[in-house]
Each structure stands twice: as structure tokens, then as C-alpha cells.
Image (tube, rainbow, N blue to C red):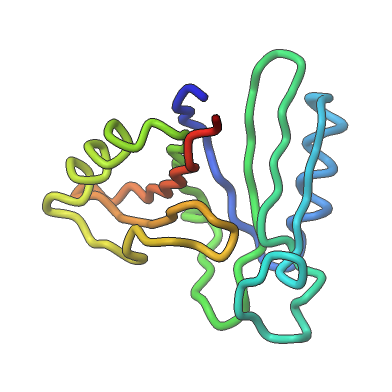
Length: 138
């Protein structure tokens, strides 16, 4: 799998509606996973909120989004990150090292409940980045 760079949007309690709206605008295939399905610790009242949504359009656009749990800060206007994902572990670790230099690691790059490695950093210029490294498939 090639590495991908795409926007990742955050919402407060309306990620499902937003991602479904974007599907009506751009078309494509939408997949949604809830906190209840994802194995992530969460408030039981948020089990049906979106942990991860991904829209892949016929034009090759990829848009991701999720609900921000109520115990995490949410500030409209800064509710985005750039997502880097793929299975090229060496390249992704290199980009992680580069972006974390002088930045603020908000979630260390480590094994996630879904089996990939996942981490988040705000670079020294204030841009939020999310990394997801998948194991190579045979």
C-alpha cells in the first residue's frame, strides 16, 4: 500500500451527519466505525459516536473524520489534522521523526487496539498530524 496524506476532520457529536453529507456532495464509499465497535476506552454514552469515518470518492479524494469524545478539548476552527497512513514503516517513522522535532507529541506512536501503530503530534508550526502505520500484508 502506498502512503497517503489526507485531511482528517473532527466534530462534536455530529460526525456521522457530516460524513454522510460529504458523501452526498462528493459521492463514493463511506465507512463508519463507532467507539463501541473500536475497542477504545470511552464514555458508555458515546458508544454510538464515530471513532473513525472514511470517505473514498470516485475522483480519488479521501476524507476522514470522527467525533471528539466529550473528555477531550474541541475548538471549532481548529478541528482538523493531516493524516499520514500506509504500511511503509521506514518512511512513516522518518516523517514522524521529522515532524516531532521541535513539536509536541500529543499521543505517542504506539500499538493501537485495531492492530496498527497510531500517534499524534502538533508540529512546531502548530499543524496537527495523525500517523497510522499498518502492518505489511503478505
